[in-house]
Length: 142
Length: 131
Image 1 (cartoon, each protein chain N blue to C red):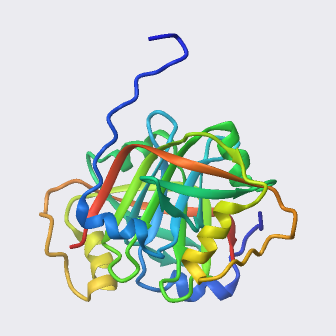
Image 2: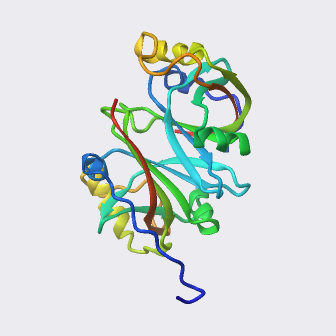
């Protein structure tokens, strides 16, 4: 092992019963660490692809600035029909990858509303990130 | 980020029986989130935590938290409150958790025992965001 590599914990197993949340249209609560070390939470669309939660981040927004400073993240997905069913993925993002074609945001919009919509002005730079899960917490209903 | 007060258009969310998402800072500085029952009390938000939980230890170490509220029927209606826990009030008679239970279920809790340590948290927001 070199100094630059760190042991990768075995990724925790997401219970099968909660898997449908990952492919649902539920909106995720994404929490990051703010500039003064305080928690910040925002609702965000996401896409489950290649065995990971993937998110699209907008240039200039606080959430992106937070993740540039500190890659640690918590993503909570709650079943809107049964709020005591939820999954929390704790970990970090792997990297912030420029997405000038906004290809991920395109696919995310298709997932949620069936067409490519973007409330950001044309030309807005976006980045993609995958959530590397280190720990999960959950509740499978009452 | 807008200053207080929280606009009245969020009243329905704050008086509803949705769960709030409580974000705290874990021992290593990373964010942790749990859905919780809450009760609005004027300009403050009350919620409870059990003793010997990570959530309690997190708040005792760093009282800064974020509470977020998303309408289950209107995904465009969302509120995040950032602020601090200003009081951690211990009790062990189920009194406060039963107040929450009545809001959410209309009756006393069916879990928990008298004598178990619990804490009532008083949250005061300092900023809000939302849409």
